[in-house]
Each structure stands twice: as C-alpha cells, then as structure tokens.
Length: 254
Image 1 (tube, rainbow, N blue to C red):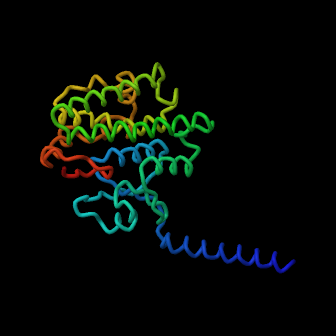
Image 2: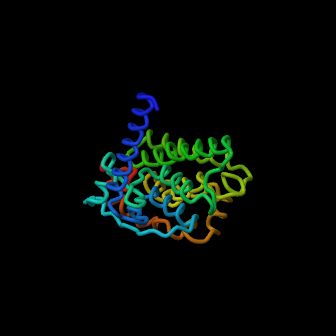
Image 3: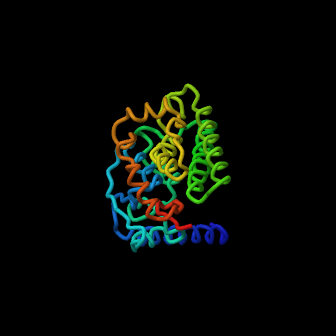
C-alpha cells in the first residue's frame, strides 16, 4: 500500500469513527418514534395520516405553542416549529420532508410516493403547489380587507379550480392510489371553514367534491373525523384578532 493510499484509508476510517460517535451521541440512547405536534396544525395532521397509512405506532407529544417545550426547541432549533418527527432520537422537520422520510423508512406498506421518476416529480410538484398556494393564499385572507380581500377570495377559488382540473376523473391525485398530494391537501379541507369565517364567504362547494367524498369514506386518520373541529378553529382565530396562521399551526398576530 502506498503512502497516499494509506492516508486515504486512514482518513476514511477516522471519518467513519467520527460519524459513529456523532450518531450515538445524537440518538442519546432514545429508541422509538415520537411526533411533536399541535392539535390544529394541518401540517401535523399530514404526518399523522402518513404514519397511519404505514401502520406505524408512535408516541404523541402535544405541544403548547405559546410556551414551546424544550423538546421542540432542541429538535427544531432553526425554525422552532412543529411538526417534528423524532426517530430513535434523531429529528426530522417540515411536514412534506417528514412524509418522504416515512415513505423511505417504511417502503413496503402503502407507498406514498411513486417509484417512477416522472410520476414522482409530478407528485412533488403538486404537493409543493398545495404548500405554496392553498396554505399561503388562505392564510392571507385573515389579514386582508376591502378590495384586497375580494381579490384574495378570487385567487383562492382559482387555486381550487386548478386542483380540480389536475384531479380530473381520477380517484386520487396520484390515480388509483392515495398518495402525497392527497395527504398534503386533505387537512386543509377542514380549514376551508376557517377561510370562510375570515372572508365572510361560503366556499365549501369549491372543494373537489368527488375527491372529498372518497376521502370521507376512508377509515382512520385519512377521513375528516380526526381533523380539527372547524368551529374550534374559528374560535381560536376570532380570539386572536383575525391573526394569520403560521406554519407551526399557531396564530400570528397581524
């Protein structure tokens, strides 16, 4: 073995040892699965749906957002937001990334993301559309007034129309299989009531109704029953003074 080869192998061995030590320190001896969440967060609901689809058991940590726990602050020190999935002591943040992680760790039961590269790219595109359009536009309605509010309502209706066109006559957004786009969107169907409350409009018919009916027929987490009670969400919003929901499920004051 040459001196250069020896140095390469020694460096590689040292790096592996460092990674193993870091991994043991990060895990801290904690085994199992824990979800740090808040009852009204549609983002946390996404993760609960994904875990239910996989049939994975986990511990639930109910977060008190006005006084964020040390667990949350340590698990997500960058954004300090829920949801956070802690797997064997290692945190994973951001709902869509968490869902993809779940699908990769438990790939055999009810695949959430297609294996075909093109279908996978399209799935991620529409999940991102839900993330950027449905949530952000709906959230803006809590702050808008007058003409800006009217424009915001029109924009929101157009977003739902776009989703209806993409759904077409398919059973789910991914075709015959319940998948990432469905999981990304389903929790917001409950929040449509809250958007109505904010905008003073009746929009429930603007949901993709045939898709929503199929979702409602599903059992477990992926049915409307476990979602936040609309009146409770509206009450939370009204007591906040028409605030805006943040991505951690809390309510930001305007």
